[in-house]
Image (cartoon, rainbow, N blue to C red; front, side, top):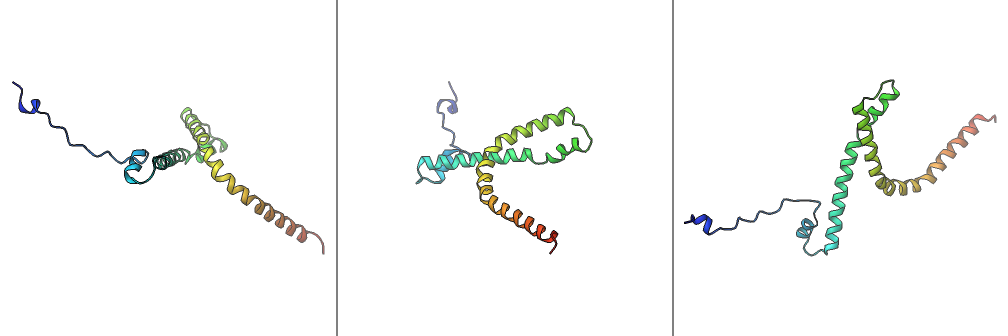
Length: 130
């Protein structure tokens, strides 16, 4: 004869799922009135934000490593491996830079050109005999 616990299995209490900011279901639960496509878009945005932060964290601190060669040192095999990984991270971040940096630079470029030109004109006026 089986013990009572084996003959009458009781279901385990359902544990709530852990919060996952990258899951569409998480955002659907938080915003039940929102359409599915909106929850999916918000989850995708959260995923990409996390990925971008992780990639930027890999890139941070690479400048001293790059300057080592310039300052007369040599890179070890491990440092070369780290540089390759950093370059791969940069290539995956470049679409974000294109979207965020280029539009801003296109707006700032005419002002930068004007500023540099006005500085050049001022210098030429000072240098010429009056």
